[in-house]
Length: 111
Length: 115
Image (cartoon, rainbow over all chains, first blue to last red; front, top):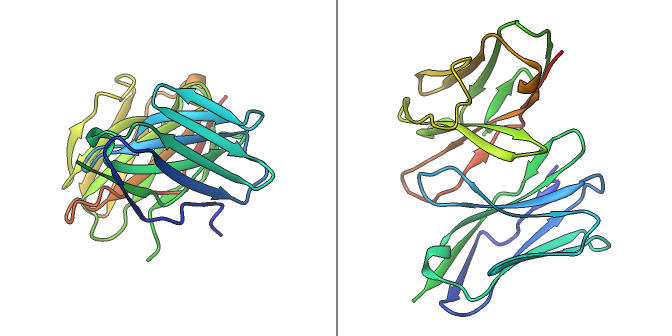
């Protein structure tokens, strides 16, 4: 049972444009959500998080939106830069510190 | 494919005891990662192996922690002696660097409680 789904395996965006990565979840017990970025041959690095009681969190070029009624969250990157090319993982966590990850979306920023 | 397999799923132990967590990566994957998940710090990378060789262990908190990967299909993370602040969920993950897709597959985690 995939509690967290990232339905787009890959996404290609022109440099300077907005990148939107989507994530759907089924577990209503998640207390928080995380986005991680991973470069090839490196471990994921934390990008941004959002509490389940909020609907938006912004950090520089990165904004995460949470729609609890739709059980959907998205990561917006604007403007997209070549260094943003990576795999992005969405994860949901509960109060027991369990973290469920999606399969990842590979973002390619075209120059 | 069975995915990344971790054991035990849950471990409760007393302070001072030795704890060993185990991981079986996905067959054919040549990179293995150990992570620790806490509410305060999120997901922390502890150590990263590539082709069974430790590449980056800068995230290992202190000498009480050690990790080994004797072969391509098995890794252990050992804490000796354990302390209450080690209580967390420990994730193992593996990936295939060739082709270099960057995909990382996590196990379900081992939840450690040190009393």
